Length: 523
Ligand code: HEM
Picture 1 (spheres, rainbow, N blue to C red):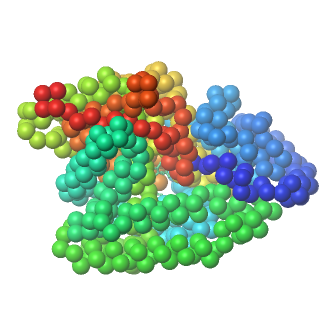
Picture 2: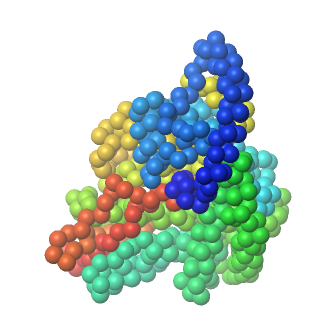
Picture 3: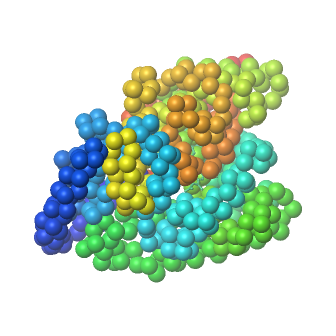
């Protein structure tokens, strides 16, 4: 999520500025301590606990420089020391992390009315969101509800399944490339291919079959635009909201002119594609959205921002999940073998590759994809929520204006929730045939993982993600095995599953190479 290294390098530039910050914080903290003490006394009188604060903080900047290169691991360690709720000071902001799924449920779902806002962010809301439009960064306004409900309709199972043919085509095309590169170069780094495939699939679903995402650099432009957008949308891009005395650096580093240019580029680009999709003679999410436009009361700009949201929220999350899956399968040949055999048995019985609707016949594959989401979730913290008012839950007091973050990695590695959490064990989910959507929207006791967020904000793309990941994985394993690369001494080069890169909202494996070995007919 939040790569504080970037923040260190670019912003904490001068010792003078830090000195000024410390002086300001000293005066502020004298005043603040008195207020805090009064509040603490009254909390204790009410029998409520304060959320504990890790001791590794500094004056003024708080914990911003203590998160290390893998914040998910640091946070998990702090939870182990201090309990299921911890409070970090990020400059003047208060961030509460939650690692217990039951407490998270109480806070995000039971108290959802108070805990479902997003933190104010100049670029994400005012410029990218064009003054509070779209879903991801919008506050829980009436317009957010209408836009979210339109997205849920157009991403519904009935509609999503129409795009399975496209997913299969894109997966097959990608796979051919991966096998070919393995054959010519000995191994291949699948990251960019998988990313292009998931964006290609999103592209076809959103804009329709008539636009070929692999032609005319369409995907290259979309990725470039998404990467630029992510740079400005990251919390640290609005550094003045953490460290007001450094607000001038924020303006200096990200002049609003550049931010506006990126948004203008996005608007023109998507407007043209939306016009083409409406005029085309084929189905698309754009067409479906426009068929609902009048009754929804949303205008063209609302739909454009929603489409942009779907592309950026759906592209990298699914691609990172698949990138982890391939890495994991290359390390767990037994799991891969069982999946491959299950898929091969289906193919020899039915003479075709399984579709999502055949998932009941592939219980081990279904369990492996569930375990993949738990073991290496594509996002370790999701998207932060924000409290609009004071919250009391499970004996804790969380004040208004607190950033709330679910520590997904810590939840997924919690031995009280999962038996032997450090092991990749698809068997733990065997027999669970529910859709991902059903298990994420059901009771907290029945949730299988926490990767899709919470309550009123829970990801509306769960079903789309499940179909896309299922179809892509099945098509890959129907055609080949994934094996470690071989080094110059003929030894296998195993992918490191214990490290990763926090990039924006997603947590991706470090770049790796594997081999895609085509199956022979009799293998
Ligand atoms: C494995 C794939 C995915 C994962 C792990 C994932 C995860 C998440 C998470 C953690 C959130 C934040 C929830 C919260 O605030 O509590 C979210 C929100 C969202 N996701 Fe996904 N997502 C995935 C795929 C998709 C896809 C395929 C789409 C669209 C096609 C999508 C669209 C969205 C949107 C629009 C939101 C914002 C919801 C809101 O703020 O109300 N996601 N997702």
